[in-house]
Image 1: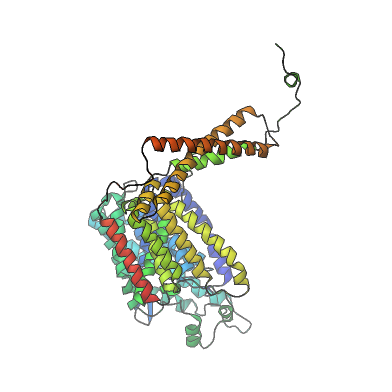
Image 2 (image 1 turned 30 degrees about the horizontal axis):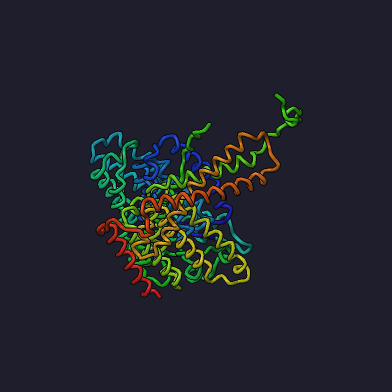
Length: 324
Length: 264
């Protein structure tokens, strides 16, 4: 679901980016007032969790791949605003260091995965929990919410892809950016997420929730203490499993590189040919000279460590000046 | 009783009071340095559990490997391990190491900018990463080890006693003389009004007094050492056994050596 650069027009990117500014600002303010200081590093753990979940690519029939995001899961554990910040940080690191998702398209990716997903998932989860009150019931509510939320995010991504050929064409009527119209892009985005990625999202959400419920139920309460060591164990476990994500070798729908696209399309949309080109340090989670699976693990470890460091160093609350 | 002539004169002096005076700046800087020296407690988290005599050679060796390596893969590997190490450190230490490393990496990048502009951009990332790594690792060693432990580790590696003596005394007397200088600055501040243009002159006076004072202090120290029968040899009281953290450190270095030769 990571939209690369040049698939969306700069105008679309600008609008989506502008839409995310107030969302992020409000989220930061809410987290400042609502979250206790001791729970702030948990946002980093959540971000690392989401980062790892996005590395597990699931093969989808038809030659593409998809992955879980964990937006609903984080919203349930951290609250939707903190989940928004966590996923936003994960997406930023992915685009900057690993070339997963574009720099210009970051606004759109943030909108789909860091805004739509946690907030929609959390709202649905709260709504369903009115009826499903038992422990099992809440798990069912979380599963339904996670499934609906990831598909909603995929739908938004599909719409963003699909409106490009309607809005931006050159003199000959050829699309400038993403070439596929709505009737192609929406099914193409939704089918993988309704099936395999949705299933992966449900498995991750319920699995992690059950794990946290079992080892430290107080973490789930908004003000409770956090068992960081156990969460670190969970992260380590997932890191070890990440090479499984390499089994699905194909790229996801709408994330092809230029050569692949021009081969399948017969031409390269001109807006993409002369677009913004950013070379990430560990593009595609690969490090040159290191075996692929080891490189994937190293990338996962580096991403998690960076996210945890970021949320430990950032201080949302200003320290009260002792002297004044 | 007769007043001296200069005391009876009227002064037309209006302090501008806007800028912090030279003296106050010095007091602030000096006090901060002294506070920093004093507050150097052991706050290295898991790094505290590694003995200095293991830590010191490990860091030296690591810096050696990083500097020698020409393979980006190895530098990546060490970077990732540093990131993991950083992510579990106490927040205060983490911030200082990050600031240290990022500043030096940034500075290196700026010095390398001309090469980038002339089109030699092949190894810039590698050099910047190496500087970040070496500065961060040496910072970790320095900030997680107290000076007493460090001299102990130096003794273990048969560093000459004279060298340890000089290091030991230097470190102690930086604090002692710093306190003395701070007291002189306070004295100067109490006696001066407003903004002084002649700040630099008073600094020379303080430096001179400090030098004289250090000379008497050195004589005193010599006498005290003679009285206590100090012959200039340092002895280690005990040799602590190796613990799990030390073993982990050994394994880590061993793995990195293996990686160094694999990727080279």
